[in-house]
Amino acid sequence: MGRRTLTVSELTFQKKHARKDPKVFAPSDLDGANLLDLFLTWIQALPPDDRRDDSRQNWIEIIGTQRYSPHIAVISLGIGTYGEPGPVKDVETGDTVVELTDTQAPTGQNRIVLMVPPVGESAYFLAEESTRGSSGNKILFLFKRHFVAALPSILMKTETVTEGEAWSSEAGLKEVEMRVKGRSVDIADGLQIDVGTASYVARPKRSAKFFQRTLLDKLVSDKSLATRVVSVNPEEEYEVYVTLEHDGRQKKFVVGETGAPTFREILNDGSQPPLSTDGLVNACTSRVVSLASRIGQAWDPAWSQPSEQ
Image (cartoon, rainbow, N blue to C red):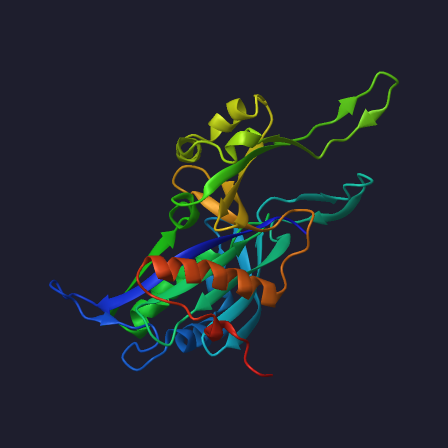
């Protein structure tokens, strides 16, 4: 199943080469074109050569495209890496299932959601990332290249929106969790135990409901601080999760590396199935409603209602 997280990019549009007060375009009206129509027409015809990147040895498959509502497109994608031959193992038995060649790519599936409001100056590109990686950055890069050729007089600007901007400025830090990659343990009687993940959780004192505000800011700049918060300093690989609470709602985020999106919202944990399409759109709607209100715009949840089939 695999853990899935969510990242968001805001897309805005303006007249190219205008040095002073450039004209701003609504994504629903780019010189008469709607961004959603442009994107769907483009991705449905994306040639195989564009979906293969030999420099990074990754490969993307377009599994399905759906106009979920008049203002939302959901694209299902396969993503995998190739270039390293070797056996595929059954983790339960250790048996070899198949031998991969250097042109074969084990793939996982994730999705992207493009949300284009009927009014307003921003569109939103949301990418689901699985344990296999994310195809969102690659798709957005390819689309920007296409957009330059399709509408040469309009500049499309993209900005990744971090979860820190959305929640950490107002939410309380309720929990810090460190998940350490497990290893085999030999018990005295000869029994060997395979440990998948060891989880260490720190919570504030009951009288304090939340950790100090500064702790979250420090975790952003130095993820290793979590090892002192939970009093564990592992030699193995680990990930840091934080649970935030705002207006009575809780969300869990994974803390990224410096330079990456600071927090990525957890859509489902590794032990849970991926969200349904409706569940994913609902999560994206919640995210965009919050984001749009902060930048002085709006996303009406009615725009997310699915089209009649």
